[in-house]
View 1 (tube, rainbow, N blue to C red):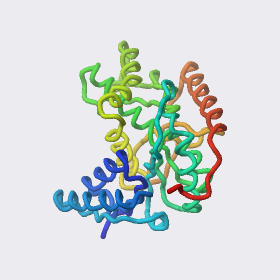
View 2: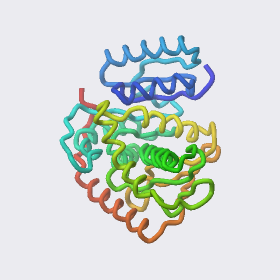
View 3: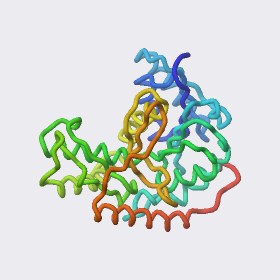
View 4: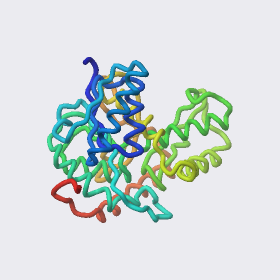
Length: 301
């Protein structure tokens, strides 16, 4: 079977949509689904096999375990433990205590893995750092700021009455309350943005709540961000993605340019206000990381 081998860890809402997206575009030659819930995994694999045949996708889908992930070219971590998120601020950080131990246990099982790891599990800036530090993997990327950036460009395009491909701009920092829109370097048709930026930023902040209120959890947007990043991380196309990677002694979102699968930071020039906002996000994430729970020795049943 030609094409890269991709593993998806997690068969919940995000994992299901993500796996379906990968099969629909036939990005992997083989897709390995891993989850702690065996019955759910078997059911998802069967459903995806039906989809692959109906859509004439060349992707072969199979269930696997953590050991099988080592033979993958890339692994996407979309696991989520059961918890009730009662946070009213820093909502994406609400799952830190619940998700950190199980993600750390997975990272232990993938120590020394040489492929690319894309972490979707929230709070993604903290979880990507935890995974990288425990696993020792060199190519770990947190998915979040590229979704924020896509939303930002979409909203700005709608306000400007143009197609999104005519907008250039980034959202960096935390995938959460401390996201930093790079207004000073944003352009439409190559020209600086004037007016309406406040409405765009407000729309960016309100969009996740709009989605949660209607369908309970964002799932399609993150799946699209993963597909876009996989293409670049696997060297299938070149381009830029805003990803959570090391930034000093913390992890947060900055633009990364991929050329032939090789990543390089490419952060735009920042104004003093944007730099201070980014430093504030870094400080908050630094403090939040110290409150993560200790690692467990195995993935809980």
